[in-house]
Length: 94
Image (cartoon, rainbow, N blue to C red):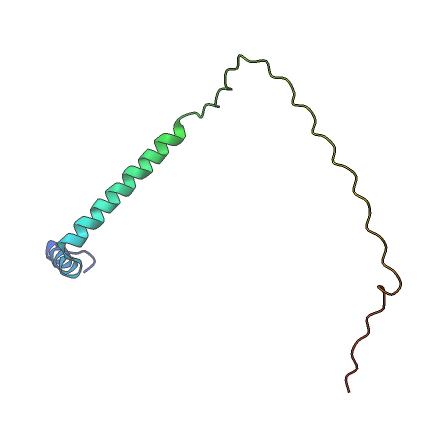
């Protein structure tokens, strides 16, 4: 009872083929193979040491750029007059 005979496995294989069809199983296996190849490629790319980019070669003497001119001072805005500072009153609800 605990082990399956060859006939059990044949019946299981036939049921799987009937449910999924031959095309879907081969498509699934192809997708699995692509995934394994991509995984192996990713592992091999990680093993390569990353080299820092070389600084560009320069034959021109670089001089520091001149400091930007200071912006003209801005005058402060005039203070509001007493009439402009009238307190806001809430409307009466009646």
